[in-house]
Length: 445
Image 1 (tube, rainbow, N blue to C red):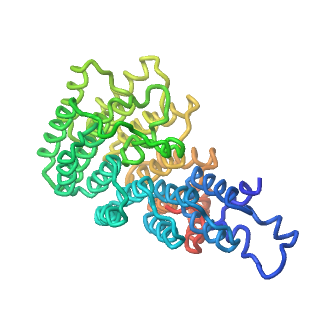
Image 2: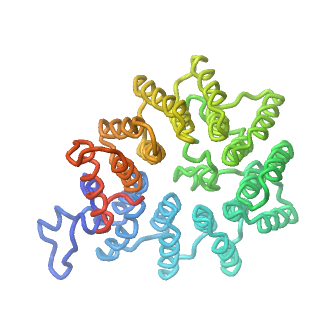
Image 3: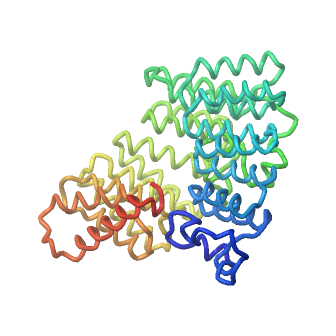
C-alpha cells in the first residue's frame, strides 16, 4: 500500500518522504505515484497507522499535507489526531489540533476534552488541565465523572495533593462516588508528593484499605468512543498498567487496579516493609498476585539491594509451570545491575542468556533501557553491556541515541584499540544517530 511505503522508511516526516507538491498544475503521473492519500478517509487511515506505529511526531506533518491537498478534516479526524498526540505525550501538538478544530467551527466535545486533560497529565502539566476544565465550563460542555478522574490523575502526576483532594471534594459534593481509579489517583498523588517516604507509604497502605468500599462514578465505564479507538481507562488515566492491559496469560488482573498502583508506588519508593504489608492484605482477601504485581515486588527487593529475595520471586514463578514472561527476565536483569556488584552483574548476564535461550526477545524500549543501565558499569569486563549490544544487533534493533552514547563512553573508558571492530561499529552508529537527530531525522528519544 502507498501508506506503508510512505511511512515505513527512515524519514523525519511524511512531507520529506514524499516531497513537497506543486498544486499549480494538474496532477502528474509522478505526483500520483508519490501521493499517499487523496481524501479524508485515506488520511484517517494514515493517522491510524502512524499512531499504531507510535510515530506520533509525524501527525503534524500529515495534517499539513491535508491542508496542502485541500482536504478538510472533520470531527472524527481531529479526534484521531488528538488521540495520537495523547498516546505520544505531545501536549503542544494536541493544543494545536484543538485550536485548528475550533477555527473550523467545530466545538470540542467532552470526550475530546478528556483526551486533552489526559495529555496534560502525561506531560505533568496540571495548570493546563485545570484551565481546560474552566474552558469546558465557558463553552457549556458538561464534564462527566470520567473528566474529573482525568483531571484528578493529571494533578496526581504532578504531586499536587491540594488539587487532588479539592477534586475529590467536588466529586463527593456532586454526589459522585470514588471508584478504584480515584483511589489509584490518590495513591499516585501521594507517591509524587514531597512528603517523607515513611509517611507516604503508610498513606498508600491506608488508601488501599479504604478502597475496598469503592463505588462506581458513572453508570458506564469506558465510553463507546474509547472502546472503538482502543483506549482503556488505564491508558486514559495514565496508570502504570496501561501498556500491559491487553496482555494475556494472567499478566494483569483488572480488579486489582488499586493494588497495581500501590505496589508500583512502593517499588519506586523502595519500601520493602510497605510491599510486604500489601502482600499480606492481598493474601487476606484470598487473591493471588498477577505477573504485574510480581514484577513490582521483584523490583522493590532488587532496588533495595536484596538480590536473593528478588531472585526467589523469579524462581518461584518459573517453577510454577506458568508461561514465561520476558518482563520478569528484564526486571531481574535490570534490578541485579543496581550497584554494579560482581554478584549482580553475573546474575544479570545469566538471566539474559537464559531468556535468549527460551526464545524470548527484548522490545525496543526494554533493550535500550537495559543497555543504558548496563553502560553505567565503571569497573569489570563490561560483559553485560556487550551482551545486550550483541542481542540488539542480532535482532536488528536500532538503539536510541542516549543508550549508544552511554555504551560508547563506557567502551572508550576501557583499554580498547581504536581499530577494534566493536568500537568502530558503535562509533559509526553513534555518529549516524547524531546526524539524524541533528537534522531532525530518526526516532525521537
